[in-house]
Amino acid sequence: MWGRVTASVVAVFVVAAAMTPAPDGAAVQAVPVDVHWIVECDQVGTAHIDPILNPGGSWPHLHTFGGNPAVHASSTAGQLFADGSGCKDSADRSAYWQPTLVDQAGEPVVPESFRAYYRAGEVDPQLIEPAPFGLRLVAGDPTATSRQPLDIDYLCLGTSDALVESVHDTATDCGPGRFLRSDVEFPQCWDGVDLWLEGVAHMAYPRGGECPASHPVAIPQLSLESSYPEGATYEGMGFEGGLSPYGLHADAILAWDPGEMETLVEGCLNAGRSCQDVTDEVRPFSGADARGTLPLPAEPDAPAAGSAPTGHEEHPTTPAGSAPTGAAGTPAPRAAAEESTVEVGTP
Image (cartoon, rainbow, N blue to C red; front, side, top):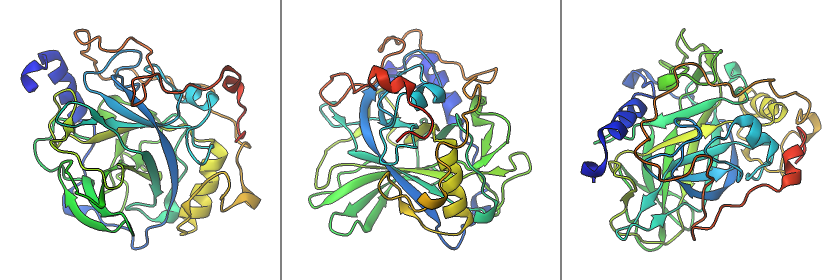
């Protein structure tokens, strides 16, 4: 399938391949206790767009989106926040996405939901600071031709107790009574200044349990888990658009309510607590909740100069500004007009 991808698109993939700064292998060490919180978000639909790498344009391979249902090719964190949430904790108005799997017939195989884990990761939990509103994250190598060195893989799990039964480099048919899940782990060390730089130069992975001096701010480590239907079997799965079967990757535009992000960092990670699933109904720190108390940054979405080249002029598969479509090809749900005036802190 690579023969059908033009040189310009290959160049884009090369740019994206360099976008995730890798750690020094054995130098990475994990915190003994996995302190975290989890938010589950709806699967929105699929589209040939990437609001980070080609804002307003098209993208050569299909992405499956989760989280905010109002995401489109020109989405910014401010627009996402104004248009509501697709997550069980409505303070999370972020957009998450990854390449779409297809079966042998070329039909999309989409996950049922996205679960965003925000962990202490490899650093001292007490040193973690809230992720900034509008931060753009990319993880994984779409050009990989062998197993990726980070925690980017597929798992087969049992349906009864969700125990991991096997780990795979590529998507696989887990067989009856099992389900497939993809895991992508993002870098968690921020330069403290930029919301986006070409090549994800504003982010790095920890080394030796600490953030490097060039990226001194430790933020929650996002791990995106995408679960496919239980018991479903798919043959010959691969990625749409000619991607290598090893090319799993993921992206996110963070649009959390700043007060809720601060509350969860302080109450879960800094405090060394595993808060599990956080929803509008189950919020572990409602008595000290800062949701709605902190203003949004004035201009959180201005991209840094030198954004990654797009190379999509020859691939107008999706009109600029298009939104994802659902599994049946119908437009994904968009927020109602009155939701565009949602105030900070409104569930």
